[in-house]
Amino acid sequence: MVRIYRQKIIIVTSRKPVERAINEELQWFGDSLGLFNLRDKDKSCFRVFIELLKSTKRKQAVSSDDLAYRLNLTRGTVIHHINKLMESGIVVYEKKKYLLRVDNLKQLVEEIRKDIDRTCLDLREVAEEIDRRLGL
Image (cartoon, rainbow, N blue to C red; front, side):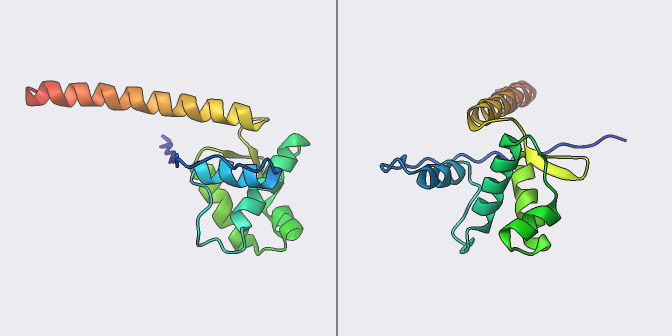
């Protein structure tokens, strides 16, 4: 069976927070990766992300039920946000539990950069082939 892997990488450019408060910086970090949006009024995606960050720091994957309980959210809400985080390549699913793809945020940014570089190389290769076939 061939599994098609899709990843949606979003980078949003905005000014870094002036205030050096950790929550402001984490919010900016997630906003810059297109993880959080204005429709998320109760910041549930942000809260799921923070819990996953804490769990990863403890090197303990967490289930959607555990996240729902800890955050006082429905399991459906947690799954919705986890799917978005998985689609972006930030969260992985192992043994029926979730954790961040890598151990820290700096590594995460580096991995995302590598993903973008690979995608750009693939785009360039296909563009060259299309150009060649179209005689451009």
